[in-house]
Length: 500
Image (tube, rainbow, N blue to C red; front, side, top):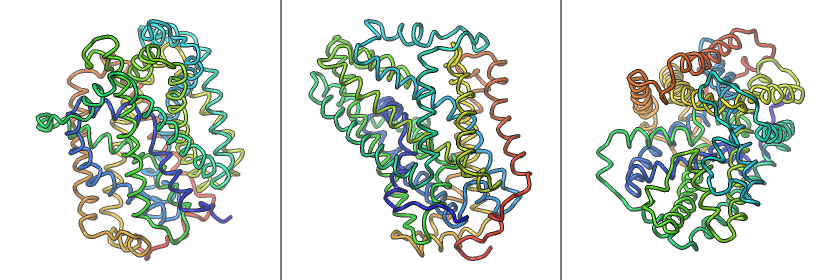
């Protein structure tokens, strides 16, 4: 059976951008910029983009396109010994990240409806943590399933199923051609509306005012590289899979540059809306801006709802904001599901549609763990271990396997033959040396910090049984899948470049 392809490079670009742009672009980047020097944060951020983000994104596009396969198939074509490196990320993003990520999207969907009546009332903090989630005191105290979250989760998984079931052209490409323009329009509405609020300039000034003294702190640079790495969906296996659906003639470097620039530009643009609203809130409450800013989940589900309740037409503004989050989250969750489905089809040759149905049902059942009263605590632990240890380790392995054990100059020649922007030897140096070194620094720093002080003040039992063992389970699953015999001949088909 011939491999599906994108109908156009625009469709591929929309899908890649859709995978890259997620919830973190709207809330995490803005907070990091504020915390790490405002406008000065652009220096480490853009440095990280140029020296690690774009080079690694080009690498993933190139290996997927040249080897013509999902992540496991691409690595199997390099060497059967390294096939597990392709399976591990698609396993832990499918049976880890997407399980709790869809739950967060379900929260956003619920808050979309809550916005119309400002259901969170005068105390959004109490509403979110005690009434909506009813968070338990310990990860061991699972409690009951939260019905509003479960209902939203069912809707999200149904949409995921519908899009991935439709295939590359009629499902993923078509959906992203609708989702991405919709997201851009919605975020533009938020930005221009928020700029009209009283006190918007106060927040905007805090967002962009440079504090160059922060750049002497190594943590600022580490956070910048971490943000670039995560925001571009690197080491997820997604970009390798998406690039494998490109035709023989594809502008690899041009697509990578556009994906990275659109993704990062979206983060910067969304930050205007976030901090304009926070500036309005600080002005309305006559408080310093620092007193109304909270990180990540607190920013989206506590600080923002409070501001929404205070502004004229806030219910409509809130609906647009949470709809933005739902759209951004859906495009990312679809890409993760597709990466796993594509890998199974490549190796075992099973029919796509029944597989998609089975995977989505399994995903929904797995996600139910995060709808319990302890769900947010489990989410926090699993997310920390997968993103801080799983993804970073895969990124290092990716650079070492492709950079040192594969014919990297051949891959660069393949890229240059079909791309608008030509790569030089500096790209080889970045992939073989600089990028894995940066990722090792991040990995060692996280490990040192977590050994010194248990993450999130959780007890060691919870961290080991939930975080570490969840990651180890996906690693064991990756080795199991890698050692199964191939039921297709895909791994025997050569790539598009020279023989290795």
